[in-house]
Length: 383
Image (cartoon, rainbow, N blue to C red):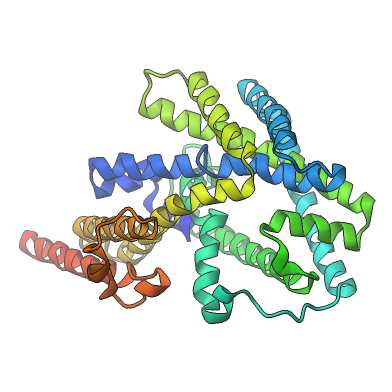
């Protein structure tokens, strides 16, 4: 849906977000690129590589081993980002299908060879499985990353100089829906591995669980191949994220050179990755929990108001909706980390779903309806 949103708008994330005002148009995309960059996704590539490819094969799990590995990992990533990326691009085209094929094989072998788990689900999933799944799904960063890179997909599917017309939108929409369906199958498969993995509840991160599942079902050679593919895939992702985030912030603040941004983001990512995957998640969860309601609102309002584009640009519907989502999400996040005033709690608790961290939906919908009413009133007066 995020890619379809970009296709319908015909702009990149910064231009799309600018409908919410000058400040929103800078702050929201900036936080998005920080979250897919140095604050979460980028250090996670190093942390996942270590926990999946290095620790299971070598038995090295100490902080020193993680630090030494991440020094090498991010030094190589920075070097490759500093130079032409044709080799990395070519590797990515080969490694992504290989990784998906190996995951499919791992799912089938796990279902065939591992005994089904009879343990009860964790407390969160036992009490609210759908909500827990949605909130944990935030951490995949799929929707936010698609907003950031959607314009690349849209442009690559079009013809040079052809613009973004109806055919382009249809082509992009079909491609996005197919990709989304396939991605859903991948996540279902990974969930099934977690279900049948003996002692699955004892794992604190999915990367270690997958590595052990590969060893139990395919053996040591399979674990080596799986680790190498994940390591290389994470490297190609790290190179792309370093380049993309550095380019965005260089355009935003050209006084700082592109390569200076690259070096800064690489160092920050190394520091976070060396602390381990769980430490990365602990830092990232509040940021992503704040961003996702805003991202969902941007996508939803763009999709809903697109059929009305000939009647009204729905400017106030977009602004009031996104502003409310941002305000409510910020208050909720501050309350969760204990940094909010006690007076905020009663204000937030009136909204249905607040106990499930979905309280932003109702006030955002009300703000959107009010803004759309104002937009339609302006359109009627202008007619």
